[in-house]
Amino acid sequence: MKANVGGIDRVLRALVGLVLIGLTLTNVIGMWGWIGIVPLVTALVGFCPAYTLLGLNTCPMKKQGG
Image (cartoon, rainbow, N blue to C red; front, side, top):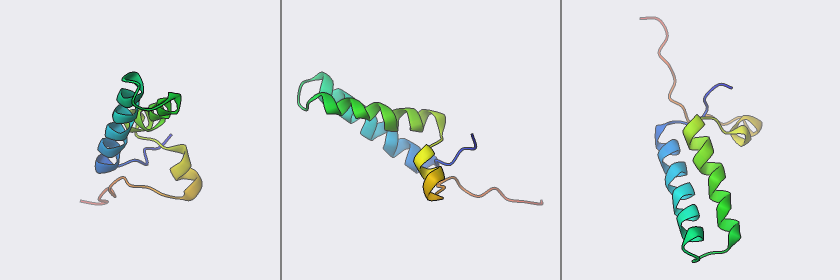
């Protein structure tokens, strides 16, 4: 698995995941809020399978040479 989720993307995913899980735990939204686990996990591992299928990559490009 090659990382395809960049820094800002990871932070936003983690925030969205935590908010959804928090809203579920406080009974503000229903059980569907547990879907917040998905963006939280993809933020933690830095890899999103959907990005691979769509050909997306938000990781910064590495400089070659030097």
